[in-house]
Length: 532
Image (cartoon, rainbow, N blue to C red; front, side):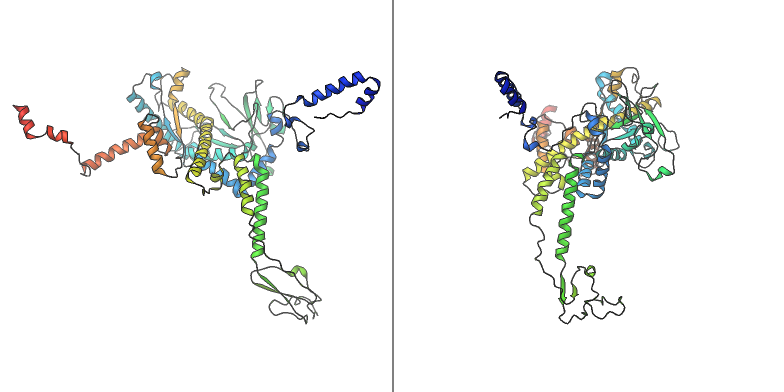
């Protein structure tokens, strides 16, 4: 890199050439010391770029309100945005995340049969709690509905909160544990005070940076009821003072150390989605206008043409259409004939729609959006036109992404709720778990769980089934693991298969086949020889 001499260098060169040479050498060394072109501020390609060096909260919180607003607007009005959110919800949660109890029998000192009995009892009690709308404080959704809504809220707003109060009320469920979803905007500093080192965006922290309490507004900041109801805040501690249980859950996926609040899923591609939406609407409007066929008829005598209504009927005493013709009366239509006055003409153009370059350009932009959303292009637009191997690769890549997000969701939401449920069930005597509150290791053994989501998508089920069979035969997988990939439960399938087999055999639909060796053992000669 060539270093140019400035005014100081020239002055120093005149009075002290030796010092000027040393100065120029030092400047040259500093200019070439950096090894990254991206760190060179003199490069034209980096001119105009915005560099904002700050911690996570400094870079996020000042833009979080705008990001949430754009994200919600796109989800309401942009097909690509709502499709990305719905695709995640369908594949991560789908019809529900199923719970399977997995006790550690070795730590608990239980035999395999005893562990099975205990697991069945826990699953029955959980089913009683999770399938009832009583678990929702608003009595509108069951557990899986709340999980789906919470996940959708995290994608749209960046984070959400789930309050876990106890509320006794008349109902079919014996449990008092409730779940209440709180939108992220409702968590803000009490009385809208400025952030401090220990109070940031409604999150009260300890000096070590751990969340201590959340300030929850009694309404949404953008609610129309602001003028009808006084704004009040409730400070909810994260942990109970005496019990130590979690009172409220903060569901978000931090991407930087020290990050207090989450960012919307669509944040990196907001501008691309807006621009692509505008471009699509413009092309659609151009195509509609080009499809309209309108005839412009010019009269040499300047008289009104009968093909259109008399445009001078509202003008008193008007006799010549050319005198009172209004240009804003022209409107394109389907098969419309419009008369023109004398001296007026129109040039016709050849329709250029549909635009042949639209689809390649649209596809190129959507591919970039898909990368930003960590979704394969084919899965994002639900269009599989490539080869079998390419489509399968896209579905496998998407499945890995959905599996990671489902694992995160179960750890952030499902497991804490299950732990609170187990505490209440044991205290009420509905589940017998000695040592649960005394030994953390025993507590963890009782809390063993497996959460399975929607089935893995398959293009050719026969190939996938044969692959599963080979993995089981080689010991690389199990019946339980492979059944879970198809969205089933092997324990339930096995019990049902046994019942069906016994019924079919009892009704004569299944006959036992006797091998040749067994036939020889049952032959009369062999029987007589054995008796002799």
